[in-house]
Image (cartoon, rainbow, N blue to C red; front, top):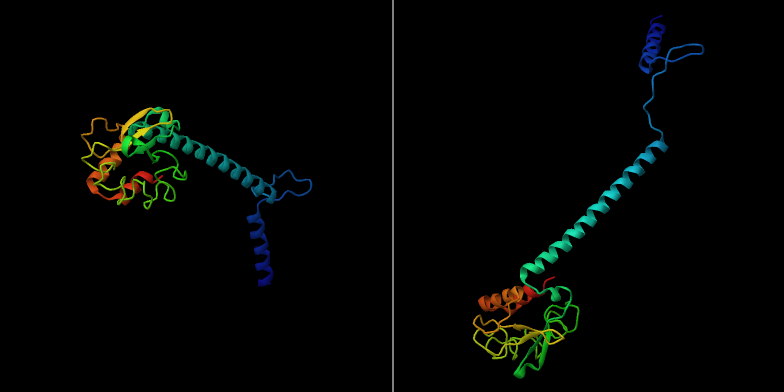
Length: 206
C-alpha cells in the first residue's frame, strides 16, 4: 500500500511539473513551449554569423580608410611635396658634376634602383652606394658623401623632369640643403649618431 501511495504521489508531482495538459473536449490551455527546433537554431546561428561578417567587413573597410588618411597626413607632416606623394620618383645624383646615379630615395625597396634595396644600388658593398662607409658616397670623410657634415659637394635630389629638391646633405649650413623634412630627419640622425646601419633602418623600414 505504501508503494502504491508513493507511486501515485510521484505521478501527480510529475504532471504538476509538466503543467496542465488539455484533453479531448477540454478548454484548458496548454502551456506555450519555448523550445527551439534544430532548424530554428541553425537559422538563427546563420543569421548571427552573417551579421557579424557584415559588421567585421565594415570595420575592416573603416580601418583601411583610416590608414590611408593617416598615411597621407604623415606624408604632409614630413614635408614630402605633393607630386612625390603621387609617386614621382626622387632621384639622387652625386660625384663631380653630379653625373653618378646613386639611387631613388622614395621608390619601393623592391625596386632595383631604390637606395633601400640591399641587392641593388642600396647594397652596402656597392661602390656607389650611400651605405658603403668605405666608398666615395658613404664615407663621412668624402667630399661627395651626403654624410659629410662639412662638405659643399653633396648629392643632389632631382625628379625625372629635372626639377631640383635641394642637396641631400648632413651639412646644416649647406646653402641649398633639401627642405623635405623626412630627408632632413634622416640626415640629422646620421650626423648625430654616425651609425649607417641604424640610419638605413630608419629610412628604409616600411
